[in-house]
Length: 310
Picture 1 (cartoon, rainbow, N blue to C red):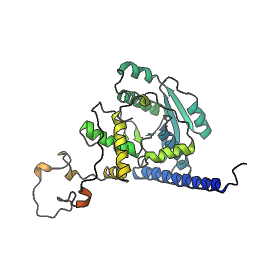
Picture 2 (picture 1 turned 90 degrees about the vertical axis):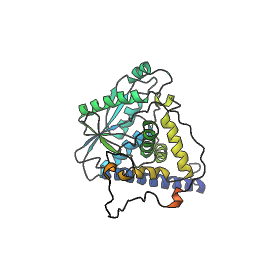
Picture 3 (picture 1 turned 120 degrees about the vertical axis):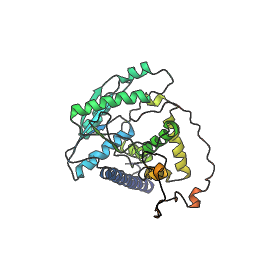
Picture 4 (picture 1 turned 90 degrees about the horizontal axis):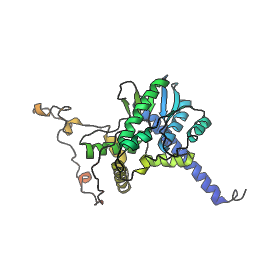
């Protein structure tokens, strides 16, 4: 075929294959590490993977399918999509894709779109109500399918953004945990992409050519606080590479004695003991990291209702 013997084309092809293989190893390693670190999947689990049609949930299912083949424990996967009856939703895309992957799946049809559009005034954030409706339906479906774990496609950037959202607009130090018990106390929710950068998921989706389905609810909202905060951390990352990873790592290295929560640390009863304290007042003694960084153009954040986690 034309171009097959072109050395430039051949070199580009080898480079692309090398990069794709490198990315694949990275994603599978990070997901495997998160699963191991937080004991997300155990022997005999039936894992319900929530598939929205976006890049994140596609990648989650894709990686879990591959990891299942070589996992030291046996577990089952079932993909579940909530068809919210959004106008123009291509109902055949996900079933066709899932059949091609040989994955058990269930499509749950519930017209939450009309409910959200009816209740939420035009121009206001729809995420909170949509999330609550979706979450309740998925918990019910998990029970009906006998799923022991519910896997969501939230990634590293989502977790850091949620931490900052709660700080800026909720006045609390609360993030998005990699593993938790559901609101009704009956299910364990896991986020195996907890260590994965969104930029890597974008590249993986392009490589794997997932049939992406845009959300006409979320995608139609231009001024979400979450979108603005995500832009802010990505600008930080551009100027200071590694900052997002540092924030994620900090979420796992909490020092209650150096915060202000009186329920976590006995500030009111503290007394000098005469015994040296390894932490003490060494909160951040190194001058260089504390130096004023170059000026960054501020991003204006307008207080709105805080969206709830999906």
